[in-house]
Image 1: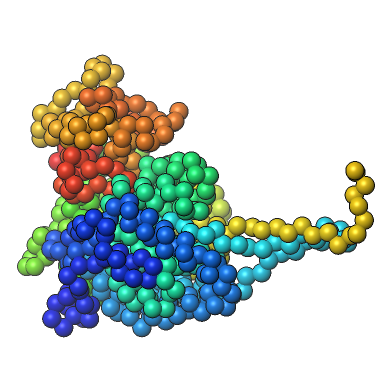
Image 2: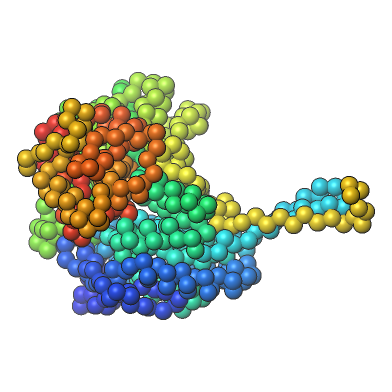
Length: 506
Length: 125
């Protein structure tokens, strides 16, 4: 199926000429009146204009959030859950429209946004509705007359900075737990992908109390910084790269507030010999598991960008994988048959090209791909890169640096210890994959890999309820689990004496 | 490939800049009335791009290596990242597109700084 691009005749996505900030339940023009084009990476052409905001607009959003925070923080768990469920229902009803909008703005194939991004967004709000509703405090009987009651209280107003690679899902990962815990949010979308979040706001604007969710678009250096440094936020959540992650923590330290940072990876995907013991569904799943490096064009913090293959199956297993990679369909992201869309920006395309050049210069062998992909017709100016595999050694830069493109670095290992040493020889520790028919080996490897998420006989699944976050320099904190309610709450302890007797000290 | 200009501390520096990067630095200095600083990033969306801030904005620690300075503007990299990158020489350049993270733009709004590795000619497309 082929969807019409947003704004085109017959498209299911309407496009206004320009989009303002969403503040206090209303659409508000940026104070200084500046706008910037929002470009589709598939064609390089503008979709619409979005606000190019300044710090004054962040202040307006903070005003609106602070005005809303007491009522929202005091709403019952049932009322908050009802709002989250209403958000989920609205998104579900408009799932196809949002899937097309996000695909066109980010470049990710619509088959992915239809099957993964949007359904996961819907489920995420429902999961946190359930988490909020079923939350219980704890009481401790210190002794028969002294009781410690523990209540969760909202932090107040939180700042949330969203990356470009999953504009809607990453917004949901941050928004749902914050709202469930009774906070109001001021959100800054990534500069390349602000519009799909604004479309999301259109869908949910009349089921969210004014001021509970506020979205300000514009340059990170001005409004991202204004939000992160503001003494009016009680927490900052961020997904992105390491230097901005450190800055976020630095600003949080200066304001003495907590932060959650998710900062990327270079995830190993390990294939043991026994995956080839039979030619069956499991083997087909493992082959697909390797090819998942091309999921979302490789623009995923957990991209399985290092494949470690046991040496005795390397030739045969890799041949099967290369056949599958050669069959990847690149092109119009709005065609449901397309598996690989354009990279999000020209800058990203240039970076990927440069990394492949670095790999070649280091002596890596290009097994497939290796250059910009040229698609005919209206997509000739799109930022497409061929699905690429580089064979080399784990000390090469292409094995150590996150490329954020459809580029796989592959190497071999001899035994479990060798696989583990290579897997852990990285600065990062976000994701990992282990593929084997031997459950004991899978368990042992999974426990010894230094990463927050070890997919075992699967990869790239992100169900709500499975905690997600990094070891090492991949970040601090977890998302995607009800433990997030802790990260978005204060703990209030009432220590209550039921004894009438004085202590006797004075 | 443009002509490169060495950093201001010859012999120790591992950073240099293209004329375009030098012009961007000069423009930023004039606009801000003082020097900027560069911090090489790694990982995720904007990984491997150098972030540019007002000098002093980013709190440098013992884990950061000073690669050199460019017209009075220091360039830092995390020592672990430096090791992973092979402690090579980096070339600061300017490319099209807005900056990422909280970085300042490279002189003009739609330009950003990039680093290229000069250890190998092929790494500077």
